[in-house]
Length: 141
Image 1 (cartoon, rainbow, N blue to C red):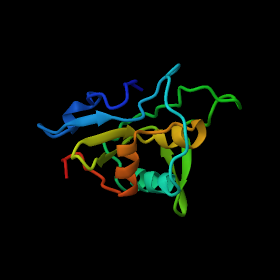
Image 2: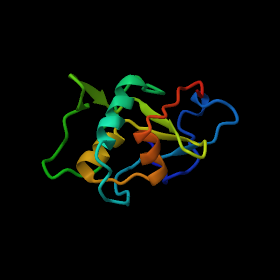
Image 3: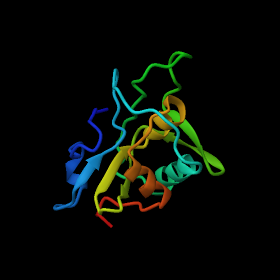
């Protein structure tokens, strides 16, 4: 998976972003990435996994594995998370939300694992947009 700085211009699957849309990256972590750590608000992980399950964007044919170190060794591949009454595999799509300022914030769905298990703290505007469930489709709405 590609690695990007927080809130950098999104360029990974650029043809999935409508022309004129300002899309920014969130949570594109890679091996050796430095990232902010902290606690997200209660309900954030539930809101994120609901968006990943119900509104995936830019789905790919392959799976990305977590590039960060794990105390218990290698994570199951693909990574699976509980979502409602079932589970979903993460690592092959994106979660896209609109910030309060109108930007589209794009995170790999595997960011759920980064937050839950690595204590990654996404930018505040992303947290707010996820909590508000302002999802964005590949067509920009």
